[in-house]
Length: 76
Image 1 (tube, rainbow, N blue to C red):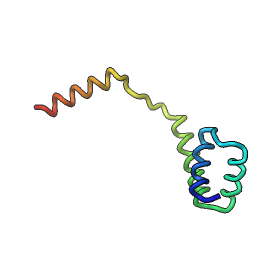
Image 2: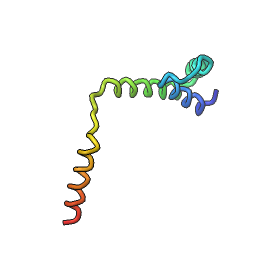
Image 3: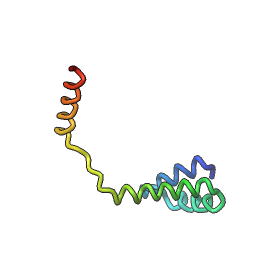
């Protein structure tokens, strides 16, 4: 498995989309490739951080209100 494919499978695995053989091949690749191991580690770390975060987005109505306010300020 090439590193490009490994990173793709790593991303798929992150979202539980990788099949069994892809996971096996990725595991073997990670045994000897430190760069992909680091990528996989950082990928998992990022996923965990996003799951723990309490990030909330604003509503569409609030977003439109902000856009209008910005537009008014820019037109002064």
